[in-house]
Image (cartoon, rainbow, N blue to C red; front, side, top):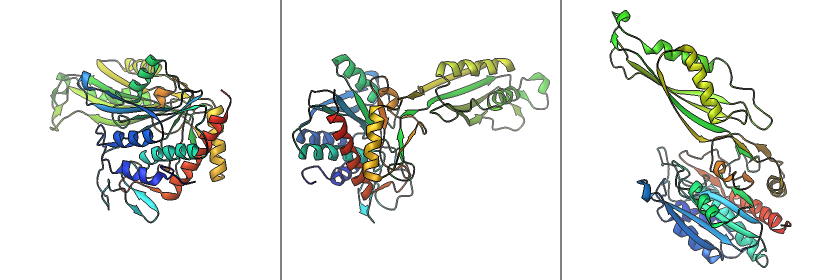
Length: 385
């Protein structure tokens, strides 16, 4: 099927050529908006952040039609920093050996281009569907995620705008296209534990209070046993120590304080609140003064298998011949915000090179993902309201 915008490659290249390292936009939203307007979408630009002293974040909500259901695609145009090790300019969007190279090729400008091309193919095949198709695109997914999807959803709620299904285009496939659909995610808790004591000379330990032994006992208390063995749809929770530090440059000084940082990725057997209580119980059992700072970037969630994941699985089977696994593995995504509004699933490109040098996507995968999104739209727009 040919026609304007039905090939995902030109748009993917053009988006990659916008060096939109979070939180910068560098023209990516203007480019996407201009394309969607040509396809008949009504576009609303939403900028958040300036009023709170944070960087201005560009967001876009675009809708085609007013009927139900409203089928939304969510994604982000911001990308992680380039890093080192590139063999070609990371924002060139070059094609080499049947692969498209560039930062954002897989995460996730390629998927955005595929969805736009899928919509273009749907429109080229006949009259616009009675259902609505929308896109929620943010420039604040790779950053702190304070002024992106979460704020746009608040704006939609205030307007009474409803989303019936949402597909997030994150690169969910580990090795090959069609392997995995994400129907949930583990929660993430980041903590900093600070144990205080009294600084002193190592020759006179009785005149000091060394916080390190207490810190080590506290950490032993929370790492000695697994948090759980997993649940029906989730793998086991994990607690990973990421830093232990006293800032001590001298070998003959007992430090006055010691810090540790760790990250818990937790399943639906826990919540951020229950885990903080669990941590404090284990630290209190050791005794002594300490401070605990906890930040929960997202709770665990699950969208039980249903119409969205079933339609997506059938579309994947049609195009690739693969039966996709329904998974909750991996890190967090903006689906953690969307799950409070409607059923949400995640499916995109192969993630082997995301965030790496030489990030790339096979041209065949761009075509196959466009076909999958097209089949999905055909099914969902044809379904009774």
